[in-house]
Amino acid sequence: MAELVSQTYANALFEAATENNLQGEIKTEINALSEILSENSDYAKILSSPIVGLKEKHELANTAFNGRICDYLLNLIFVLIDNNRFELFFDVKTEYNRLHDRQNNIIRVTAVTATELSSAMKDKLQSKLCEQSKKDVVLSNEVDETLIGGVLVKYDNMEIDGSVKTKLDEIKKQVRAKTL
Image (cartoon, rainbow, N blue to C red; front, side, top):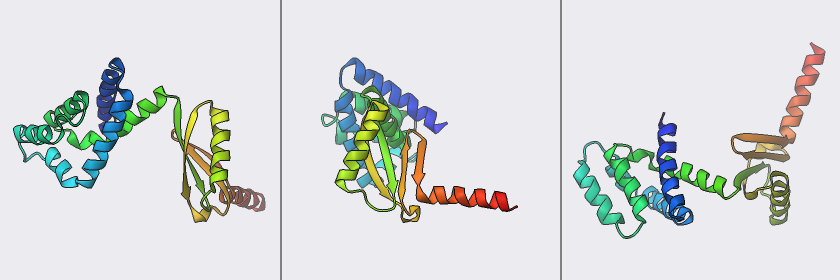
């Protein structure tokens, strides 16, 4: 349910941004604001607290953000406060970024490997993924030493598993099935 609500807020913000050609500016601001709120978690807790009144929350948000972020983003903050949903801000940010990426033909890919990929290997993998997907790929690398070797590629809730560990597990299952 919370995911659907976050998507609704993000869609409304993205639609307003698109109508006014502010998608990139709002993406930059919402990410910067998210970072600030993460670093100042007590402030975010105050804006989410049912104990603090709406008027006080509005005054806090207005004092902190008015003139520093675009009006659309400030209005989102006020709407989240008014609907007692400020805790969804970070989910709204994530969904907004997803919408922005989709509009700009960008996919975010995580390559999970046993050791850190060299810059040359990252570039080669990124180039291959760009070629196959026909999209701009933003590649990140995570290390999982249990993989032994190979690569596990994750994007858009999908996985392409080319890890040695998985291949060995598959062979082990086949051997067990034949011996039973």
